Length: 358
Image (cartoon, rainbow, N blue to C red; front, side, top):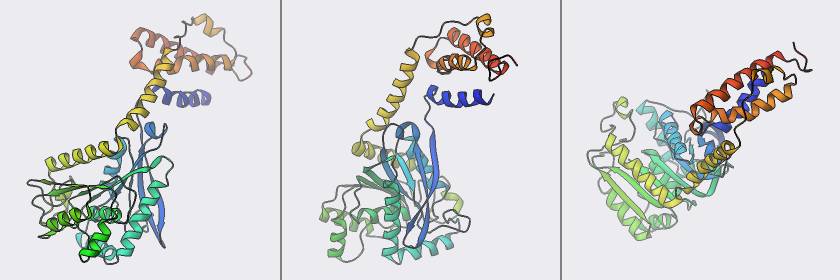
């Protein structure tokens, strides 16, 4: 029966057209600090070719389940996504996270107070993403939420080879310093910038948007700023209301519209053919398997006469992938093949390794 189990596990992936989202934690270093990222990808896409990589910069709560959920959503779109860590590995071996605004403020302040640390950590995350063999390092983008939006913009200002940057409800999106310093920083930006702003976000200081517009214009950066009516800070996070922070709330319409805007930008920059092509390759492989001649019926007497395990396994190998590809078979043929497979399994259990009946 162990042989049969192994056979089934081997054959089933060949007969399913469903993609499987894979995830794993990866550790990487920024200086002496160990960071823990969350990588998500669609193995149905990356098994065919490397896919564009998207860096996910979390809110000030840290690399938590919300950041992970966004990485998985991006993987479902066909991208390889890495949610990065800005605070370091905790005692439990995971990225440090919190739901306490006071703690989050302290941690975020520790990163913000030293621009070198911020840049070092986000760059380390970007390098961890682009070093993955399943990532097309020439096609990357960064997105960020709240504090993460600011961090994504900081990465863009390092001159990182990004095609797009999307900042959702970020309080600070302009470059710091005097006009000359800001121009020098913004001039390095290679990406198209999309700012998704809550129209009623009280965390954005007066004049911040005007400064951003002026800086982008001066540096001739390609950008879009979308403002969503009725939306406040953290409008994309369905659990934002749970934090009980004044001025922080979820907005379903703004969440959906901003995500759609991001997807449209990614299609503009990366096209949609990479994911479609990979999935098409899987479908073509399935069609080729099903185009093989459907095995002729086996009688009970023929099955009973089989005494060699290799012969029985060959018969199973020929029938099982076709039987499992249900969408391409008529029900009568599928039922017949599945019945034969059941009988072959039973016969396999009756035959000893040396070919003699048990």
